Length: 314
Image (cartoon, rainbow, N blue to C red; front, side):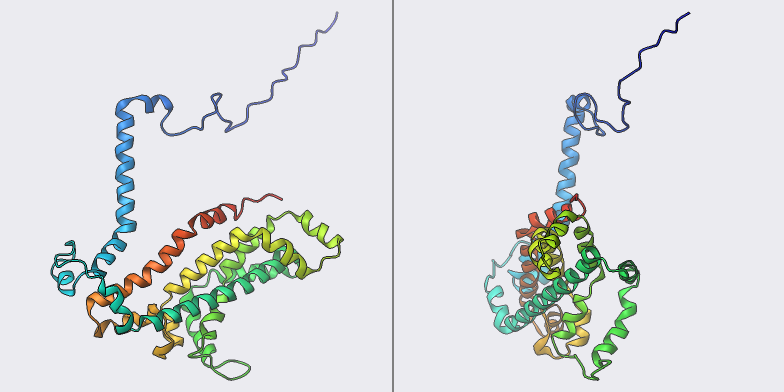
């Protein structure tokens, strides 16, 4: 009596989540549903309503601020939503510069943003490089300590940080009314360190090993290999740092009591009590339009950097 061997099923098991045979991604509405006129027109209406809502919520405040910045004071008070009853007042935008000393405050804001940007990149890049590429024995402990600081509310560390700025521990001096009082706290940003470290972790380790074999030192690897490959995430961190420094209010108010050194975010609320509403609105529009324009110009790089933050494979 012979045993007949049954042919084995050589078909590969179907994987969960595999695409359908037609190659299209699964969605809430299928292609057959979209072919129905009622469903298709309903989806277009829903999409239009959502898009209109996003435009009103996002661009509405900016458009109203522009309208108020180019309107007379009485028009803004009597009819805040009317479209220029007395005509467009372009002179408000030019008159805000000399009358509210916008040039000085804008320059202070640029200096603070540039210093915070440079300090943040230096501290966060070097810190992430040590934790991700050099990987010392105590790197895991230090990474845990950096992560732990993210769970501390900023308001809790505000008073100790302010007292430290007033009376430095070693020298006994004070950083009040100096740019360093804003630059140094902004540079030590745990979130940026973790974000950059995660990007460095995804870089190909073979490049570092090949560079060490060729005799490249630690600084050479950082400058010649890591930094050129990290332009997307460095652009994201740069944009976030500049925007955060531009809109910062409480900390510059505490450490920069001298009006001559205050940025726009601190100076404009101070001069609001003695300024015309039309000029104040013009100054606010100038202060807001600069970071918004900066984001719109670099939005492609920003979104690309966010997408690549954890997507590079070694």
